[in-house]
Image 1 (tube, rainbow, N blue to C red):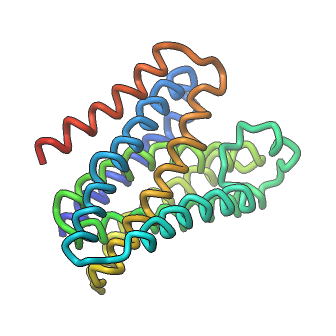
Image 2 (cartoon, rainbow, N blue to C red):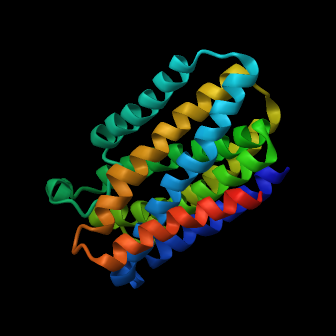
Length: 241
C-alpha cells in the first residue's frame, strides 16, 4: 500500500514537470542539475549498498548483478536512441516534426513511466527503506518525464490539449505500475538482479540524459554545486532512514 501512496507523488511530479515545461524554461536547468545529483546519490548510497547486503546474505554471484547493471544502462541507451524518447530540444530531431512521431515518443515514455511504478513496488518488496529511496529517485526523474512528454508532443506539431491528454496518461502510468506489484511477488534473486538493472538505468538517466541537458545552454559553478548538493541530500537522507 505504501508503494501506491508514494506513486501518487509521481503523478504530481510528472504533471508539474509537464506544466512547467513552457513556463519555467529558464529555471529547468537548475532543477535538472539537482536531480542528476539525486540519482547519483540513490545509486551510490542506497541501491548499491543494498545489493551488497543481499548478495552477501544469500551468497548470490556478484557478476550477475553487474551484468544486470550494464544491461540496464545499455538497454535504456538503445531505447532512447531508437524510439526518440530523448529531449526534443536536440537539433537532430528538428526535422521529425510530425504529430505521429510525438505520439509514438510519448507512448514510449508512458510505458517507461509504468515501469517506474513497478520499480517502486519491487523496491518495497525488498524493504521499506529501499522502496522509499527508489520512490524518491522516480519522483525526481518523473518531473523530467513530464517535461519530455509535453515537449515531444508540442515540438512535433500536436495541439496543447492533446499534449495535456498524454501528460495525464504519463502521470497515471506509475500509479498503475505500482499497483500491479500487489498482484505478484518475486524471489530475492530476482530482486537483486532487478536492483542492479535499475541502478544501471538510473546511472544512464543521470549521467547521459539529465546532467548533459542541465549544462546544454551554459555550464556554471552554480549548476555543478546543485549536482553536488543533490548527491549530499541523498547521502544525508540515507543516514536517517
